[in-house]
Image (cartoon, rainbow, N blue to C red; front, side, top):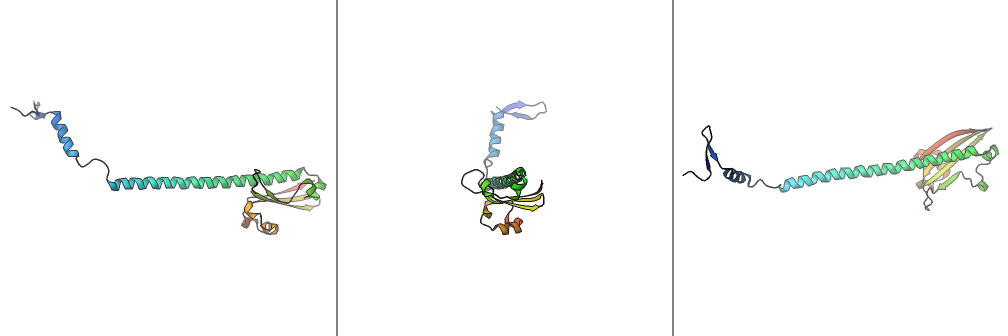
Length: 171
């Protein structure tokens, strides 16, 4: 008789075998080809680590840029706030600036969020010429709190000035 895996002949004359025989042969071909090698796993881990390290670096750069942007925005606000205040003063009050009885200062250490930590130093220079007042306001980071005012005014760029505004007030 015919072997148990023999099913007959096709129309073209070739022998047909059972699907069980074909499955057994395909299993024999796959032996030794299962899973990943140690080198493939290590390369995969390395690639994932490089991608994660790149993302972490981008995240840190983003955080640093956001902090710097916030510092500059707050500095610009403080400079504009001082100019707006000076515009509300009368001619005699401008001439008398800074007046300690009104709580005015031309060199201020500023704690923006009242947590006891100084974040900024604001310098205001007012030059009077008849009825015109030339106003210069510069805001520095707290790291410049101990620097002499004359040094900051002479070279603000080398002392990390965060905002610098100038205007003329006329009366």
